[in-house]
Image 1 (cartoon, rainbow, N blue to C red):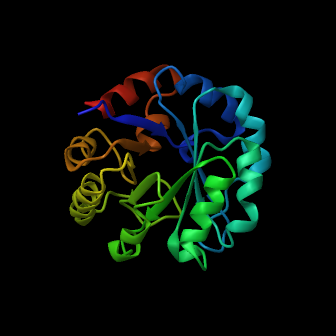
Image 2: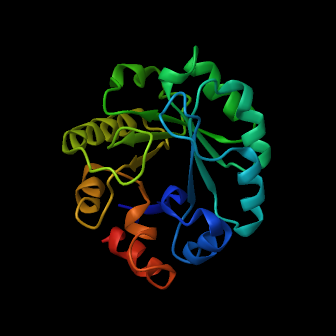
Length: 218
């Protein structure tokens, strides 16, 4: 098994110094996770393309952008131009998820689809031929700091099986309540990428970010 990748979520970082926060985790992280929320699809508002564009020069790490917005398609090119490398969307947020994923690819980004705790895998199965990443949410999207939903472990196993049976190189990402206690079980279930916010940025300040990330790798 390849070493699990860590994508620190800036949702838990100091918003007054996001550039410096990226620099502090850069030596230890594999990518940077950016949560985009619109106050409509989810009950919170965060950042948009202008902020991502300003953060892009701070690191060469991939920007892993999770779009919790609706509509989506009219913003894809803006996020791509701002510096996103991966754009992940929710099937519930768009009229035609297959078309949205193709639009993301056409914009030069890897295309991801998010699976909420209440999302049926029946919505995901037809997307296996086109998707590059599947994000399993182990909390309900919209806020950081939520507790891990234990019932979603079986969904991670099921998604891992779908990916392996497809023979495609699809990344399996997990986001929500990731900590040193939950990470080993998520990795065992088949995750390739762990998204972690509080477990990275909420414990001890920048001098401990490396130690916090290494604790998640196991």
